Image (tube, rainbow, N blue to C red; front, side):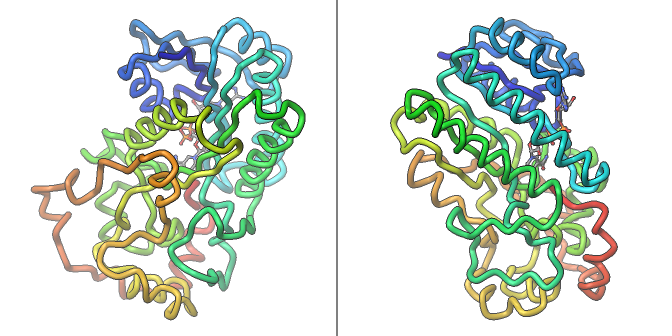
Length: 326
Ligand SMILES: NC(=O)c1ccc[n+]([C@@H]2O[C@H](COP(=O)([O-])OP(=O)(O)OC[C@H]3O[C@@H](n4cnc5c(N)ncnc54)[C@H](O)[C@@H]3O)[C@@H](O)[C@H]2O)c1
């Protein structure tokens, strides 16, 4: 078992990662400027630090005496701050944390990126092919997405400096749903899971992607264990096996992304727009949670009524520009 530093451990995704990896037997040090009472338990140390302070960060990373790092801390919601603040904050913290981890002698370094690097928030977006995967070229369309691409490139830069003695990977989690959110707590964008299913316009900006936070924790554990055995510097999408939608995306996508009729035709049944085949092939990982199981017994989950689908797609997308998924 490892000693793992997790930055942003008090956050929506961080709490599930911290508890999931602690339950798997890892010792966890969470570095976050905020505390989380539910993380007060054996095997988890919470250290308060402002990660935009590079000196304080490298001190905290050195004191942690960890052999692995998972970097989550960031402004996690596009357009939740001015664009210049988002790019400066996320890339600055990443440099402090990832560079600090190398300086502290941490041998396995993992960072959270985002599917948004692909640029599907751009007006008129039509991908060359679907499902989207790690070969799809990144074309960020806002400062948040650009900051995530810079974070991926920061890992590549550090690898050029250290060589393969240090192992690196990035992962792009889909729209994270924390366990309490299945029971009705609001998700990152302020609506419940059921509301996102009832009104496809809410999930369309994320191209109907999602992932249970516990699946991200299982992915992270699998990745950490494999980092010495897979090619260095890999990037992975981490998502559910299905789409967060009641209709096949072959029918739904063209309504919200005009011009995708041809490429979306492959997404029949419950197929998602984001492939996790790379994680399955390289790590043997696959997600264990899906909305149909989590909402089973709930009438709303199986409802086929979908009046909101009649909304005109471009208007729906415009109205959510300020609220785009991470
Ligand atoms: N939630 C999603 O759907 C989603 C999807 C894709 C990628 N991501 C990425 O995953 C990561 C975690 O997302 P989240 O939803 O848990 O975000 P969150 O906002 O819930 O948590 C972020 C945590 O980072 C901490 N933090 C931020 N700046 C800090 C600083 N300067 N010093 C110390 N701590 C700081 C915050 O206190 C918070 O606890 C982010 O990098 C985000 O971009 C999230």
